[in-house]
Length: 341
Image: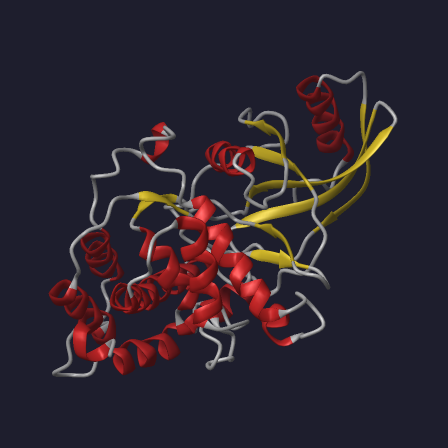
């Protein structure tokens, strides 16, 4: 546990005072936040030269997923999004010196609201008008997608033309060294039905219900940027609308909270680009395969990495239901044109 001893808190306070350019920084109430399967999030009330601000300190969990960005890298992405007006927590400071609290961390202003996916999807007292919320989320995603290789440079993301996601999936499957017939079938379907590539944008890569926060009125912030990278815009759209992120609301394709039409309308009005339903279908199949592989990796954090938490082990049991969805979407004899009709 990171902030559970006085020495760590004192080191954090000393570093933060210097980073924020204040005479003193004192931590008041400290509590570990729930959620965050890959990172640790701590709510810390700070007194900076007499001004009280509510913050979240984001740092690494005991074990992590290899493709996750470092806290400093995620901080750069958050700053870029914040500067463009994306609804995200205000980034305040980042520390790459592991000698302060034992690992990298980032400090951001705390936002109000609820983020738990199941509650967001099912508690209709939250989020205001749900169709308006779906449309708002479409606009937010379109704004994120205005970040392109031509407008921003992130050295840690590499060349946008490098790498192939399907080949990466095959490598992950080979590394598992266990039979995964539904994933192999789905990957073959993706390989055969892959549409021509689109120009790359900054994809959030985890834009879904469960990774944004809402209050009684609507959206308060988009969270969790640790997977962001260059990708085709429809990949993010398909991830948001995939069945695996509807939390049981199968008839609400927009993240389990609204209609496709509202989400698409918000995105298209803000971006000036039309959404192609066939591409969305392809990326929804892709989303289920990606999520299944991530869930398997999460389960291995429990079995092999020693991270004995309920969230991790339950995630590791998700691939069975995801396999069903992959097979449902890719019946024999149907390609993309037939399946998406």
